[in-house]
Length: 113
Image (cartoon, rainbow, N blue to C red; front, side, top):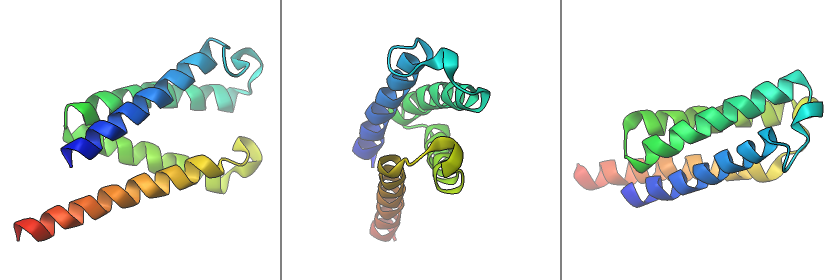
């Protein structure tokens, strides 16, 4: 499990880096984004950074943030496609990462019982 959390941490650092590029206009044009997109990018930048730190350190709050981010992105990208567009890669990514996490939790509980 620790290795998986560290891998997730690295992936979330990557996500935070992409959002930082967005804020500085190096990837997306932040200045012309709608307010909803600006808030969304800001939320993801802060949350991804915090989750990456917590996951790397193996803290329960890191896992909670990972789950919060994943679920919030799934809700946003599946329910509000008219705002966020088609984010199929991220939807699949989050289903896979949550499923893997839950599978590892179940496996570790079976091993210890």
